[in-house]
Each structure stands twice: as structure tokens, then as C-alpha cells.
Image (cartoon, rainbow, N blue to C red; front, side, top):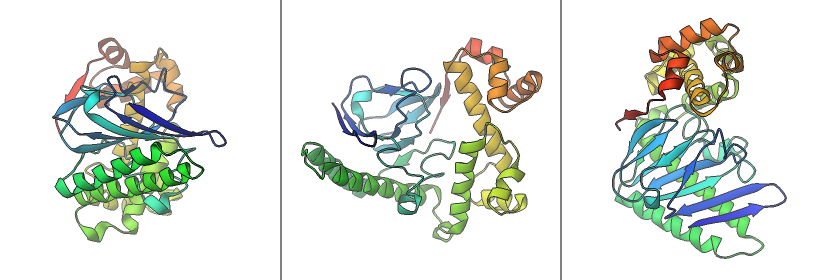
Length: 286
């Protein structure tokens, strides 16, 4: 079952997907025009989810936020409840002060698997039931009601994610905001800007300050975050498109194809051509 509410004036879409046999996204082909953020909830037994060619374990009663530019499919889609929305329906960037999820829940560069305890399952089930009720009540305030519910859903999941990934409440302050803004800036500029200094200047911080801050939240350094995002995009372009290595080189802000090939091989142990020809699916345990 797929329920869709659209705003013809803004182009905003909100979808609720439940017990769909075939639920997936292929961003670099058929789904590129529909830039939907996804919040997926596995209500069944343990299964796998394949994200950009990498297989992850998707445990029972776990939430998985996914960016609009990720391609994915589920082993058992019928066990998954998912909310999808585009920026036209609710722009999480413009309304970051409301939900504080940008650069953390969405756009951190790594998948977040957020487990639900029994109280959280109960609350999410109630929220799901209200979504169903509002989707089945078409009136002149339906979109407003659904927007409020979506905000509540995002805030609820962001709180759960913080308690798991940032358990120390002392770190829930402006330092987290800098961390989130860095991730957001990398997402916006990684194709043209590859140096930590560039992002540090935008944030009015020194590169050393950023490195110290990342040590609190992430095992990666700032430069590793930038390079990891470039590699993710390179793999997507090699995996899902027919663009040449030279085209990908320039698209990702490199001036020399040989340098890009060396960069890619240093981080993946494969040349771009070897990766494309192999297209090996990698399993990641969670």
C-alpha cells in the first residue's frame, strides 16, 4: 500500500508506504527526478537492506533514515513501513531550527540504524496510526496536519539517534551544531572543494578545532569525511551510470584522471575500471 499526498502549488509530496511488495529507489536512473528523503522502519524479522551496492543487516524494530540521493532495496519490503517526502513538502534545511536533523539524521555520510525499545515502538505505532487516519481524511487542512506529524516524527527519531550515537548529554550543544553544519557543507560542496581549510573558514573555525570536535563524535577526521563522501559518489557514478572515468574525474572536482584513479585505488584497493567491472556487493554487519 502506497499513500501519496501532493501539494499542486508547491510540488510537495508525502508518501506513506506499508506492505509494498516492491519498494526500492534507484536514484541515478528512474527516481532521479523524485528527490525523496526516506525514513524506513523494519517491523519484521532481521533482513538485509542494500544501499548503494553495500549490503547491511536491518534488524527488527529499527529505523533507517536515507538521503534522497541514495539507491536502495530491501530483502523483504513488505515488512517495512516508510515515510518519504521531498523538500517542497518540508525542507529540513530551511527548518533546521525546528528539527535539528540536518547533518546528523540526514547527510552525515554514514547510515544510522536506530533501534527502538518497547516504549519507542509504542510511540511510533501511535504516530503511524495517526498518519493513516490523516491520510484517509482529505480536507482543507490535511497537508497542515501531515506536516505537523512529519515534524514530530523527525524530532522523535532525532532524539532516539542522539541517545544512541551521542549518549553524553554534555555534547548536545553548539559543538554538535558545528559537526552537523560541517557535514551539510561537505554534502553541498564536496564536488568542488576537497580541503578542510575551505570548510573551516565557512564555519569560522580553525582546522585544528574541527579535528578536536570530530574526535568527540566520529572516528573519522574532517579530511576523511570529505574523502569518504567523494568516494561514495565516485562508486555511485561508476555503479549506476555509464559515465567515463574522465567524466567522473571532472564531475568530482579533480583536474587529472590519473590522480583521481590513484585517489580511488588508495581508498578502495581497486581502480575505477576494476570496481565498475566487478560491481561487487559488499556486506556490512551491524
